[in-house]
Image 1 (cartoon, one colour):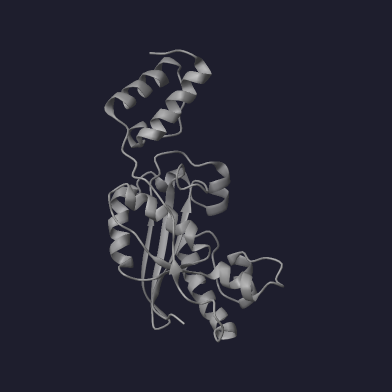
Image 2: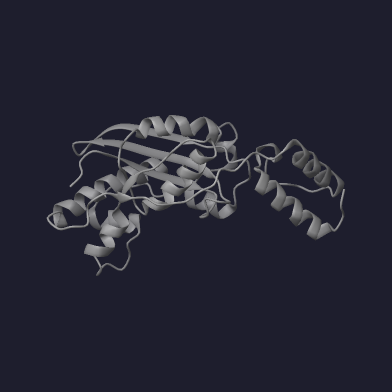
Length: 233
């Protein structure tokens, strides 16, 4: 059993860390089985949220407009986590988004993790669902689902509930989290200038911040506009 760790949860614009953006990060530090510290922030993603994301998380564009960008947040989060093992419900998902953001700033983020979803699947196969909210209801753990800090706290409490019931068996150890990423560079001034001209030329209403795009994002959006409208600059 591990009694010292950081429980982590993120909310994002979608499920793919290569193309989607973080909008909320929550973490709680656990020492000797007790929560001793917390980390929480909203994150400005540089794009408008889809309605389904707002419905799921309760987070709106208005709430994010003055939030810090991920470049400001990541160093603070990594300092909070320190050398801790990570814990979460499907922790590789959360880890992948943080590692991608860290890599873009040339920061190392290699961790071991404990996945409460994997533990639940192993020891509670009879349950109809292994979603965090369902398991919290099953174990009577309070949760405000899809709120990052609440989900991080709930995952930590779930871990100890599972440990009470099955902790004498294997399956609770921390394992290396593997997710390969490449650093993405910001869009070049030439890419941004071209996009601004295309948007103006075609009178487009856009839902992203051109100045916050990466090279690959700018290239992908430019190609999409050109394939739709068929006009080069």
